[in-house]
Image (cartoon, rainbow, N blue to C red; front, side, top):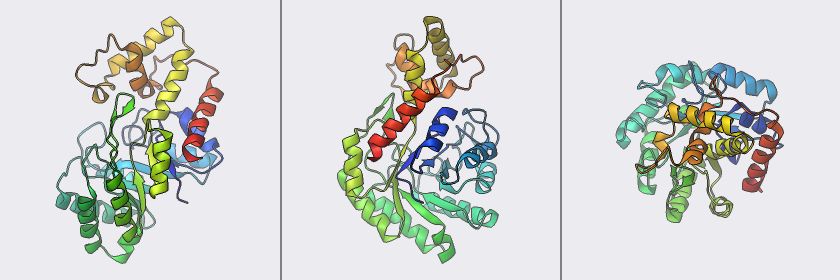
Length: 314
């Protein structure tokens, strides 16, 4: 089972839409969304999230996105979270690059986590490498990374690696993909990954023109991750169905959360760009105790998400 599309579980409604979609997809919770102790999505922790999805459907591939050190809301070595991930997820994206920028160090950390994981669960699978926003890996650096990994692993360890992240110029800012498309990176990286028998995968596919996604698929991209875009679709539906009092409350919760700050430029004015701030930040606060969610919109949310998925995959 190798889905073409992996979706971030930005809310319970999005998870339910993925579960109800006719074709099997993948879900990719980050440690900030769902972790072993906490997360901002529906009050789920790792075990309860995985149990919920599997109780509804068995063919959804559950993948920890960006597992590793410093990938949650606090500085940590990532080990406690990772060990619980190994007991719950089908696959874990090993991403030490947020702390370890040098290729040699990232290789060593990737191998350390891989071996630790296989001791806990011999059936666990892995995704390796990282996205451009964390550490640019042009084809030559990706090749060096993979050579080091494969020259230091056993056949059993190599067989546990299934996916490799490749980069072709994606980056998110506000509600836009501001990356510069590098077709040559894409084509070269696809060939490099194929040499190792891995499935290629690109992160941050949000807000791309459907025609560009299709071009990438035609060139050999196998899989793409999309997350905030679906959260924004749900946020817009809520916003359009709120009265002024509800909108003011929604905006204040978003503003006070501070979750929007990492996504905006220095000249962004949160008091002027009210709707933009909510669009950026809304999905972070759906589970906030003071958020007054408009009722009766579940089917509209599901249909909107399904339509976008079909557009991407058709």
